Length: 92
Image (cartoon, rainbow, N blue to C red; front, side, top):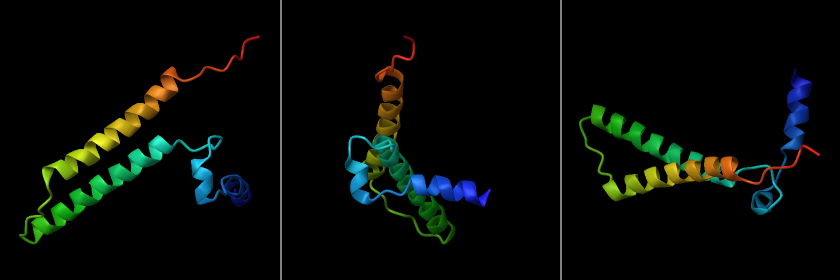
């Protein structure tokens, strides 16, 4: 099992500049959406923790709403790209 995981890990060994190439295997829109979602989760956790201690976390609505729009937009564009993207001709 470890050998299989190591072989798969070697296939994904990329540098940061490889993310910006046109022929990579990573969906950049999903990465941006996931990072935006993580920021929203961190906001929620910090808000809950500060609420437990009796202090209100002051987050401007437009900042949080922008992360919501980025998350929904990135995942939506990513899925639309999968649905309406180029279809490969497998039938000859």
